[in-house]
Length: 189
Image (cartoon, rainbow, N blue to C red):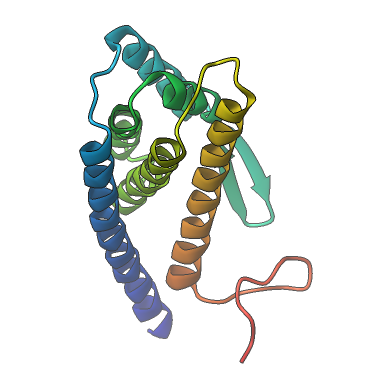
């Protein structure tokens, strides 16, 4: 009985986190739109969408002990999109790719709706934050080293946000766990 209520509590916690992240993503996206609306190059936007769809459809599956982690090669189209597209359109493209892929996975029962919603929203938060970084620092020409350092910084921050949000949702929904062969997710009180 206790296990069932803990699972239910974890399920509700996942929805609460997803709702909070949705508000956060909308606020950051609105801020990005206000500072850098711009119009995209439609062929580049379409190409970026195709690359992101490919990265999401064909992830690299890493399995360890009782879990699995899917890693995508989405950083290359992400960095190129940040360079060639206004930050707002990078967010739109990433969310559209996520909606298409995760929506399909949910419709075919490969993912639960909460997992699909969380994945889309967490990627929106991380991409929007990267867009703010790129806009705030600014980009130069393609031959300028600082341009690529800014893009690298934005990509690293985006990855860190994604990983931190993943650790947050796993810790909140599953609790603090650890074993003698793995890293602990929480410290003991």
